[in-house]
Length: 243
Image (cartoon, rainbow, N blue to C red; front, side, top):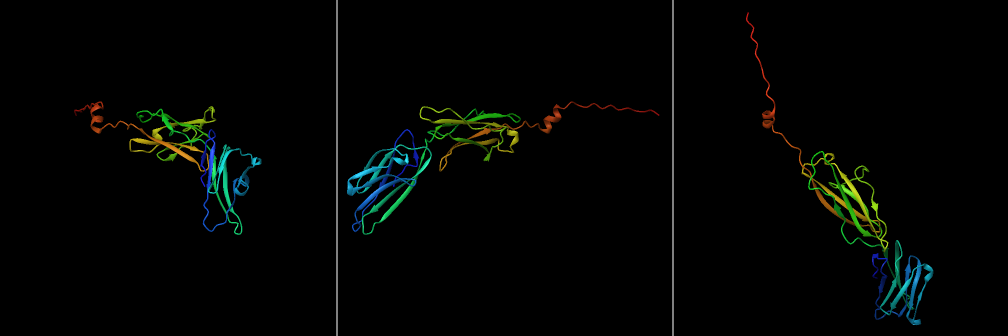
């Protein structure tokens, strides 16, 4: 059985079921398609007909079935649905074979998330504001920030995920800003590893990410020689007492 994992609402989905008759097997009796527990389509070769059951709410636009395969085309529905192909044979065995797969209505982002606003470097004591934007998708992506592999959850450091209005196809973009204070992180490498992760809340979740480095300038170090050279000299006076 071939069922697409992700179904684009702009494109009709095609579900395929293939089966093979062995030499001693009885003839094919019927092929049935189910959405969940509801039968949505039936092919019966002895009757030379197909039947579509619209009471399940699914809309089948086309079908093509024969003694080796049964293909149906339908308009995807929101959410995740389980589709099952059931193949049965004539007597005396009346054998039955079933196989199922899930299909989720989703449009995956075309590009990786994009990090913008990254400065060349930041000085100690300064902060940086960087933004992560996820491409248009359905559903909209949820964005999480990580610094040195640690999730950033403090609302002062990261704001909420913002979601754009829907475009003509119902797709939405999302973005989230990170406030980076290098002094808050114990790093001696001279940089912080920033990662933006965009997750589509589907089953299973679809995750895409982008990682960059934020270089942190080290604090100026004054050597003891320079310190003594630049310090003002202290004058000493001697007082002699004559007895």
